[in-house]
Image (cartoon, rainbow, N blue to C red; front, side, top):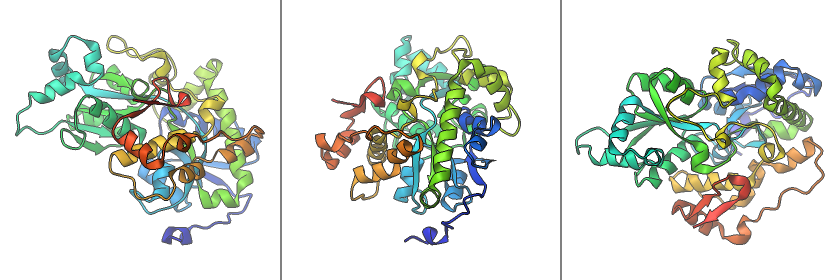
Length: 399
């Protein structure tokens, strides 16, 4: 038992408030709506939402049970359970609240340099133009600096994957730093960074404000993939299964509500409130519709954030294994006795089925039937295994 495990109170009273953290991003919408529309209350659970400044704050507060759960990056429960980047604390997810929504944006100056290297938009999107720009940099010039939101995040891994496919070494050829999502635009505006990978609305807003160019979406790199989840302290979840199930049911209802186009205007109004995203409703619209800042980049329709369906909300063990493969690829994965067991226990589909009264058997886990875990890690590290271009629900391509 770790020191943190001993400090965490396990048996919270069943009628106590449940505190859930969130970061003011578009994909916190299901948490906000479940609170504001009374969906938590209808499920018999009294939820207090806590607006947090960074993913590290979310991680630490859930680990110490100051928050029982939170709006989390999908990779955060895995990293916490492995003890990478923080003390080892078991955090689980049994509900995904969103998929997609990430993008890579570069500064106007870097975009101009890339544009002088090619008039082919595909070569800007796939990073070949960036590679050409870097080839002309002098040996003594500072490397280009890119930001991502958290070391154990899809943003970090998508940025690294995109650079790598353009034959740019993310560890040697560029500098990568962590910047909170809400600070990305300021960093780009002040030339502290040359580009970033972040979720909406921070790509669209950079374009709207004329300080950057959005060049590629996360969907074009990995297809449809889970983005944010409900992550909960596993000790709390084990001792409070009824409350945990109630959270899942309320969020499931909220995700359906958020995806209903008839609710868009009310949704924008609620999210724009200072208690939540504190941003004009018209700017938030970019995250929920085909309306984007004009003239620079058109998002593929498939790249938009989506919130509701069994394929989106159900924990996806294949994706957990993919993230573990990315951690290994970039030198973050410690020794694990069984990747599959760890993935199943962290992305716990059994609780999802219990909470939503789904009787069908949990999904079969076939990956280890095809490859040994060591071969799986090797294949991902060598970029010989990729997510299917249409997304994780279609499995993997073996190159």
